[in-house]
Length: 109
Image 1: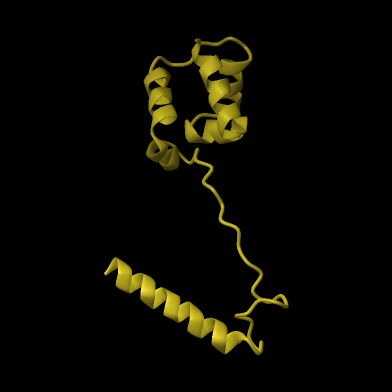
Image 2 (image 1 turned 45 degrees about the horizontal axis):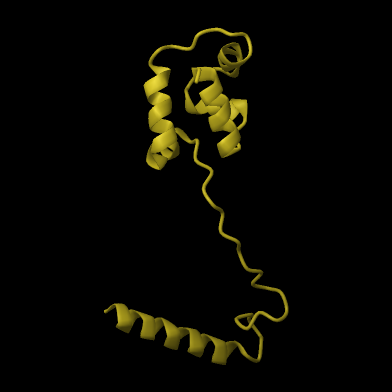
């Protein structure tokens, strides 16, 4: 597989734009376009670097090419949230959460 095809596959798998890949490789988007579209040969050092990027999540993170999973956040101020300030169930919910946390900490000991 040619290097430009590997770059395209990597971009597709990770959901990266050309600008994001160019920033990660510390090159201009114009140069990346030359490699991907115009048939210009990328530097030979890019092959081993692409191997590392594909295999190691830590390298992707260092280069800013990692799209980490975003955790969903609750809606703390909506009605129905038992921890909501002013909710009549708040004290009981907090006490239950503390009890669960202490039990978990004791089990992990």
